[in-house]
Length: 311
Image 1 (cartoon, rainbow, N blue to C red):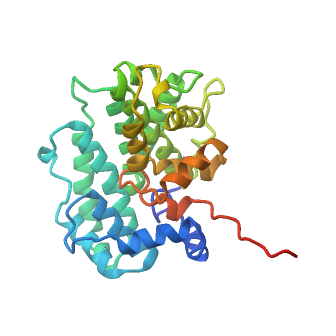
Image 2 (cartoon, rainbow, N blue to C red):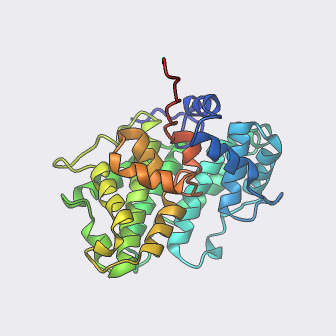
Image 3 (cartoon, rainbow, N blue to C red):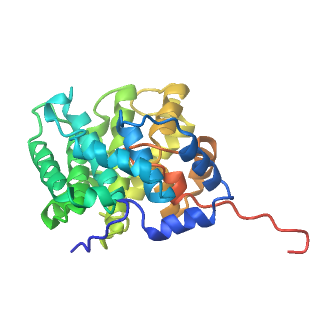
């Protein structure tokens, strides 16, 4: 049974404290610079601005940024189901909204209207429970992702448990090598994208669940876990032309990890796989609004301080 805690979906006050304690150590320092130097509109225009403003509030106590997020949420940002061109985009923003709401949950201007926002958000999530006939494994996994995080922001055990069940069912479908058959039915870049974003969702689900007392990181089916799937996808950052379902050019493969690889900081924070170090060093700071936010700031392991000749 979850024990709902509210800070950020993917981090706790301890993570915030560590980010401040390591403000002058890389790669944390670069992440702080990234957060402070991004040019953001006063009025939130997109999901990335929503989350970056929320981070400035939560980690830097920037109440003006907090005001922008609260104003956007209370105006119904992202909750018009008819504004989306496809089902998956609605799922992605639904996940992002949950994170934004958690980050400003304690904002003075949000407290009085939070219950009303929760009701509107719950209605939005409910409308997404019916998947379209053309839905894919990616839609299925991300609906589970949405249910898990919405369960946290709404303090709803049933929603959270439904998301956890999708996680466990999906892990049971991961092949020993680390891929999902349903994800790689397409050819080439499409198959890589599906595998990548399915794994990304599973990692974020595991991290979010860990902060409410549910261990999905350690869940395995016949020895296969989310770490198995993460290791599989990481390999193709280095060797995209060896993708079994059609060679991938290096440039789009690198762009995929650069733009959406923020979840890999969580993987490294949890298990320290050696094959991730070069990838992270090349791509940090990593940020994606839907996939954990600015995870280099909250999850990166700071470089060891250099010592003098005698210690």
